[in-house]
Structure formats: C-alpha cells, structure tokens
Length: 342
Image 1 (cartoon, rainbow, N blue to C red):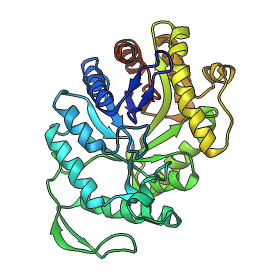
Image 2: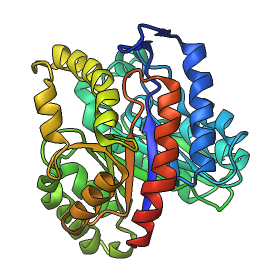
Image 3: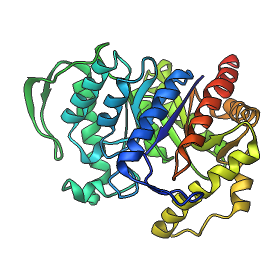
C-alpha cells in the first residue's frame, strides 16, 4: 500500500499562536515539508490548484518543480489540476517538464473542481461544467498517448493537425488519475477509461463509499480494464505520537477551514463533539496515534479495496514544527506498518 500527503498550501492566521502566514513563508515551509516527506519514505506528495486568497498553490506544477530539486524518490502530483478551466496542451507540457526535472516522478491528478473561481477567471461558463471536463480529458489522454497529435477539435478544445507536443515524459506517458468526490457518473467514467481513481472522503462514513468503489471496478472490468483499476482514498487526517494531542493540534485549523466552507455552502459550524465522533473507526477524520491510524486504514481496506491513502494533514494553518513532527511520524511509524500488511 502507498501512503502520501496532499495540501492546498493554506494561508492565514495560526489559530493557536496568532501568527500570520503569508505566501512567501508558506511556500518556504511547504518545500521543507515535501523534502522531509521524501526523506522519511512517503510515496507521494500532492498539491491542489486553487485560486483563492487563503491558498498559495495556484500553479501546482511550478511548486512541484521546485520540490523536484530537493527530493529524490517521492512521487510529485497535482491534487488536483482543474482541467476544465485549463488547456490540456499546456497542462501536459508542464507536467511532462516536471517529469523530466524529477527523473520520472511526476503524476497528474485531474478533476472538475470543487471550487469555481477558475471558471470566470479564465473565461469559462459554469453551465458547461461537465462537458468542459469530458472534452478536455479526452484531449489530454490523446496527447499522453502519442507524440504527434491529430485532434478534430470540440466545442471547448482547439483543433490540432498533426503537431508534436513536447517534451515527452521520461517513460513515454504520464500517470493520470481521475479525482472524484463521489458521484456515480465519475466512478463509471474513470473505470471505463481505465484510469486510477482518487476518491475524496472528507465527511460521512468512509465505508458508505464502498458501493461507489465497486461501481468503479465493475465499469473498469466491463471495459476490459480490470487490471488497471486502482483506488486512492484522499482524506483529512493528522498523526502524532499521542492521539489526543494530535487531535488538539488539528481541530482548530481544520475547523477554521470547514467553517468557512460551511458559511459559503450552507452548513453549520463544526463542533468538537462532531470532530471527535468522526475520529472513530467508522468516521471520516483520520486523526490519532500511529496505532489508531493503522488500525483505521486496515479496518476499512477490505470493504473499500484501496491501494493508496493520501492524507491532507496541512489543512488550515498549523505550526510548521508540529507539521514536520507529524510527517516524520507518518513516514516512520504509520507507513511501514501499512506496507507490512500488503
């Protein structure tokens, strides 16, 4: 099993210390976090694209290219690239360049986007939300498949007549994952295309996502791609030597983020009682001691059948020194136990 981390590069005020974290400081800290994740043997570090004042990563490929120079083994991924509001040619070129800079360690995770700022920013109509993604994903996969592209053009993509797209990835093609929040349509699309699935679980009971994971695998099998089916759980979590202290560190930062989203999307503030309940073996918070995290992940694996767990530990603003400790514990105490389990 693979274990990794992802973040959006949160900016703002540390709720524990009152310190203000700006873009320059967060990027510096972020590179140190990725370097340490590589040193302690984690498999993946992902950066999500956002265009909001509280996140520093609007260009994942740029930050990951900087990370390539201070790491040697860890895979470097977007988490996610909002393909709907981007140009598939440029996305491919950027990540193929990253792949060469990192000696073949780049990965591309694409999605429709759970935030909408990029659509008006780059001149797209939200009414085309689904078709934008479908058309641009098809074009991206065609670019990934062959060096010279002949593409007829669609409503939302340009025609390309036999032109080369460069540079090419180290191993000929980029790993491309589909990121989804849990709609059946997204499960079927990923399975039918034979692409691995990153399933975001940030609320509710993870075990309830088992039918969606099964739907994905059935779609893959029916399309002749059963051997390509892979599932990653992308979750909120935090690990520490002491489970209660880990929860006390993570809760204020995560609450600040989720409460802001709640104000935007119409749900109430998160209570500590709700947070603690979600730390149970059946809940969506992957927070606790190494033993608690290992037991929780392995307890869910039989029903969900995943191959990878990617944790968003840097959600909200958490003291950088505490984040480094958590990364070390995840890499040295949690990941080895998960790998032993196969």
